[in-house]
Every structure is written in structure tokens, then in C-alpha cells.
Image (tube, rainbow, N blue to C red; front, side, top):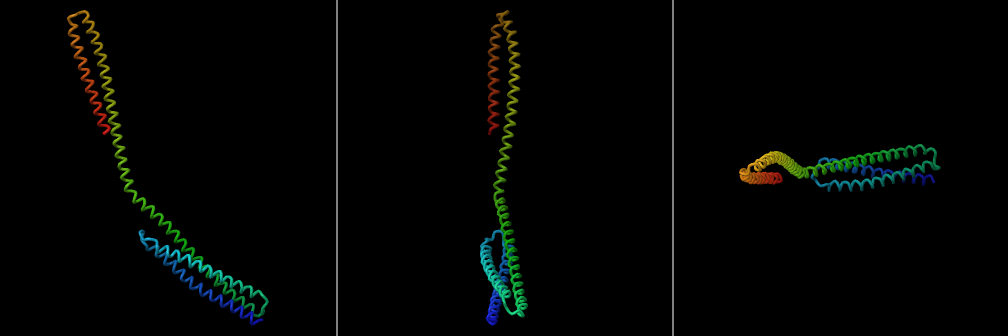
Length: 243
């Protein structure tokens, strides 16, 4: 029975050492993969495709799963070794068995800590690189569109300035037209006053009536000509303002 128990213990120790050796090799390769991935991402240019990075990410995921499986197996072996040390056995050998078990537990703890640390560092670097890549894309997108935006802004400013000039010219034209209207109204009042006086004189002196009629005809002709000139000038100013 003791020989069988001893063989069982030795078989567990053999499996533990084999898993520890596999984990040691896997962790070394895993650390190299993460380091090369970090350096490759750092040295790659902005225009380099991320094909290599994607391949390394797949290798990272595969190796992480393999290491987790090995850690799980080693944890199971350690649990079996702990059960063996707690079972009925030779008391004199119990201290040596506990010492051996503690050493295997320490190795498992170190490997687990190293794995999680390396994995966390890689994920942090990948997240940072993805964020920087997104920022680079936004910057490139902004740069590519800035030229078009500048041209649009320049055209908008020119159009805005043209509209302001047109508004200012229209306001000046309206002001001139209003002043002309006021002047013509004033002149009309004066002419009506003169005409009233002349009609009074014509009624008193029939010989002057013929002269007044000729004056009235010339006045209407002059008024028509003046009005036509003012209308043409106003139309030309408006056409100039909207072109």
C-alpha cells in the first residue's frame, strides 16, 4: 500500500514537473511575442497595414488559451497532491510532502502571476495603439477634408462680401431716389404756386394766356424728360447691384 501510495505521489510530481516545464517554455514564447508585438507596433509607420499586428493578435489569443489550459491542469495536479498529503499516510513523510507541495504551489503562483502580468501589459498596449490609430484616422480625415472646407469657406466669404456690397449699393440708390422724390415734390409745390399766380394773371390779361400755355407745355415736357432720366438711372443702378 505504501509502495502504491509512493508511486502515486511520484507520478503526480512527474506530471507537475512536466507541466511546469511546458509552462516555462510557453511563458518565454508568450513574453517574446508580446515584446515583438509592442516593438513592431511602435516602429510601424502610419500607412503600414495592420496585417502583421492582426496575425500577432491571433497568435496571442491562441497562446493565452494554451497557457490557461496548462495552468488549469497544473492547478488540478496540485489539488491532487494536496489531497494526498491530507490522506492517511506515513506521518514521518508528511512534512517532506508538504514542503514539496508548497514548492509546486509557489511555482504555479509565479507562473500565474507572470502570465496575467504579460497578458495585461499586451492588452494595455493594444488598447492604446487602437486609440492612437483612431486618432490618426481622424486627423488624416480632417486634413483631407480641410482643403475642401477652406475653399468652401473662401467662396462663402466672397459671396457674403458681395451681398453686403449689393445691400450697401441698394441703400445708396434708395437714398438718392428718396432725395430726388423730395426735391421733385418741393419743385412741384413751387410750380403749382407759380402756375396759380400765372393763371390769375392770365385771367386778368388774356394776351398772356397764350404764353402761359406754351410755358406749361414746356414744363410738362421737361418734367417728363427729367422723370425718364431718373427712372433709367435707378434701373441701371439696380442692375449693377445684382450682378
